[in-house]
Image (tube, rainbow, N blue to C red; front, side, top):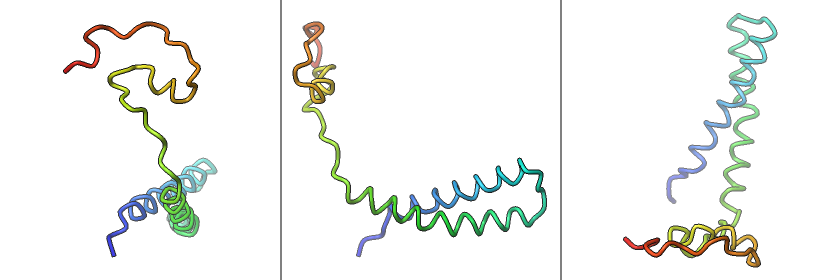
Length: 99
């Protein structure tokens, strides 16, 4: 089984976000003791681990977005991918897309 890179990246970020939000809320409320940081760690772990696992699972299950054929050759390719009837505002430059 491969190492779960996505999960091991998303879960700590989610834990840190929830713990950071709890610390900011506590400091704003005027709490400055070690109890605030202990409570923030517990809140971060209790809320961040399930949220991170859910986010990683959802990211894996979601189909990737379709990519335009070559956005470097045609600057409005991405816009036409969304709306194929979109009019071309100007013709591409003669040297555009040449390496």
